[in-house]
Length: 82
Image (tube, rainbow, N blue to C red):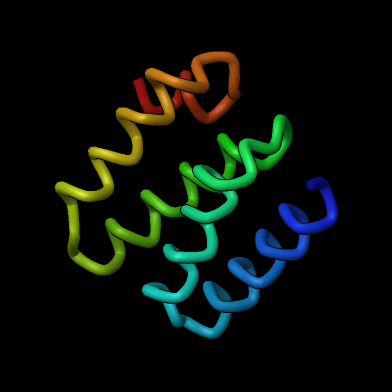
């Protein structure tokens, strides 16, 4: 639900701030895939792609951005990624 999605998103933010990018990706992807939260899903996918990029995993970043554009075209980050 909403509380779970927001909690997991906040955990991802904290992990990203601590430079634990792999942990952040896992948490962002959980929000993006498991919770399907109207407000947080698109942002979570975009931030996961950003973490992948910083990890040097460009192909995974592109895959996540494609998912963002295909499945969440109404999200503001989708237009940036297209």
